[in-house]
Length: 67
Ligand code: SF4
Image (tube, rainbow, N blue to C red):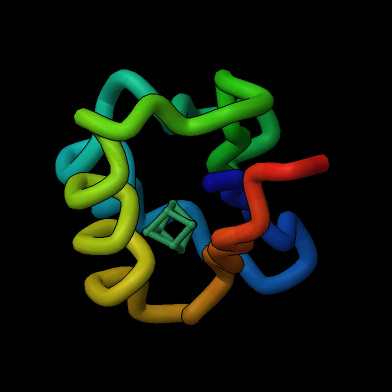
């Protein structure tokens, strides 16, 4: 699984950081960035939760892990 944050949409609420601190961090400019290129299986639930909870729907999940 891959995950992407659209920095144009992200409003910096930081909810994703709370849901999946291993995956997201807050950029100095106030939007979230993704720390990993590939989400580990044990973190996938947290990433889905973050995407679901994001008020701006700025988080995009790609289930394709083959490349
Ligand atoms: S929850 Fe959404 S809007 Fe908030 S920081 Fe994360 S990606 Fe941005």
